[in-house]
Amino acid sequence: MYSNRITRQLTVNLDQQHINVRPVIKGAIKEAAHTLTSAYNNASSNNSVLVANSWLCHSGSKHDEFLYVLFKNIANAATLASRDYAIQVEGCSGVLVWSLQRKRPIRAWIPPCLGGTLRLARLVGWTSALKSAIQFQPSCAKMRRKLMAEDEDYITIHYVGVLPHERNKGYGRALLQHVLDKADAAHYAVYAEVSDAYNVAFFEKMGFIVRANVVTNNIPVFLMVREPVISPQSPSPIPLVISPGRRRNST
Image 1 (cartoon, rainbow, N blue to C red):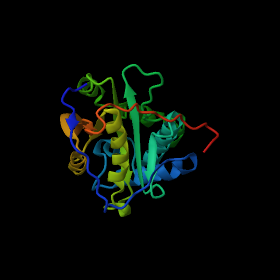
Image 2: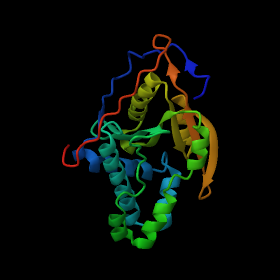
Image 3: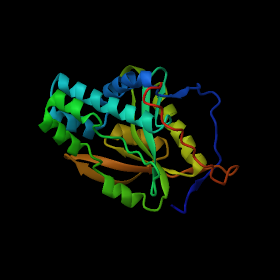
């Protein structure tokens, strides 16, 4: 773990409107998938690698359906792993998927790139499904392991998106801050992979620093890390308790 952890007095903006962050329940998984699909399809702030990869295999309406199937399976798997791992604001106007990464995991969870492979194969064909499964594997895994080698445990931000017409309301910031507060309390670093200038600037405002970059399908991917902000009033870490996942037949 990095020895130069950041320590500073935390401040609270009392004038900032409170935005309630809630878990994504089973009944909202489809809505969460639609939100992420819409967010990542928007050219002004999307994951260029994700969208470019989907266009390599699909076109037209299948492109949107491909992203929807992808995000629905990711959100479903996240809520089964922990009720904490998929969160939303204002009726799924914004959605974030994250997880706790452990070097010695008891039950590690990494979001499945294509959890519904059979469904996807029926949608786009086996060739495209297999090609996508390869392309959506974590392209930066080797560099990530190198960057986070000193951290026993850390948090990864997998996906965050806000509906285009709901932007500039603080939803993305509220979602990310919800996770950062957990990380700060536990003294965990936070890792994210970002692939466009808009999102790099957003993460930098939240305390992230670009540690490395790689190129995937001719698109640069920036590997960003945020060290925990440790309050002088709470110098000792508070264990991060991860809620159990929902039952498959529950909400």
